[in-house]
Length: 297
Image: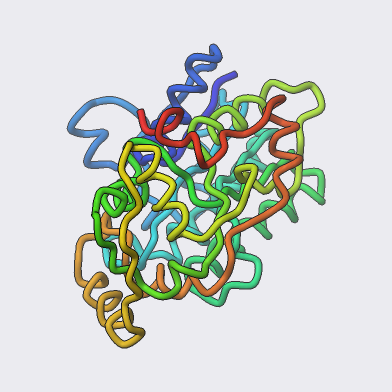
């Protein structure tokens, strides 16, 4: 298949491109205009501004499927979250329906169903629009909602691994209670490939999660153990300092995963039923106890 992959230079997107190419697909990588001009590779697209379906139609010539893996954690002038998560994906999905692209996969996020954050509400809006097009038989849609995605090259993964190296960890309170079901980035990429290969391709919403849920603090402890270290002392950061640290994170580059939006999202568990995901993979998903060996590479 000829597949347009948006977000191809991001953490998840890079792994998706590699997996799709290994499966024999031709990947048309979507990249920023600056990167396209610098490398002369990929199709230039600007998720901050390409909010019209007409802009997307020429890019869909000869395309069999679209995989949207673009995402930002926080709002910024360069990458406004409303455009990146909602307006531009909706324009892309409408263009797919008009151009006759039959298969669209949206990489969304688990835990957004009831979250009041802008991250969640904008992701939900794009998901809802795509699923409505599916219900109208305009295209075949699959919304993948992964829990915390773990793997080499991920900013959050690097943060967890750095925390796991500390003999004494001072963690924000929500990290001690918020539950996640971490998923290997390789499993997520394998799910995308499988959903394109199967004769009866899954549609609708699919939770992508590991076999077992645990708190973020327990995940860090497990990563520490997997790395060959003994147990660490874990201290709880007072709420006032937690709020302050998140606000300080807001002032740092967008690649830093700790910010007010992250703190707000920790108010909701990031867990789901993994059975459909594992059925799609045709095997058990990587357990969190094996993430260092099987995903940190």
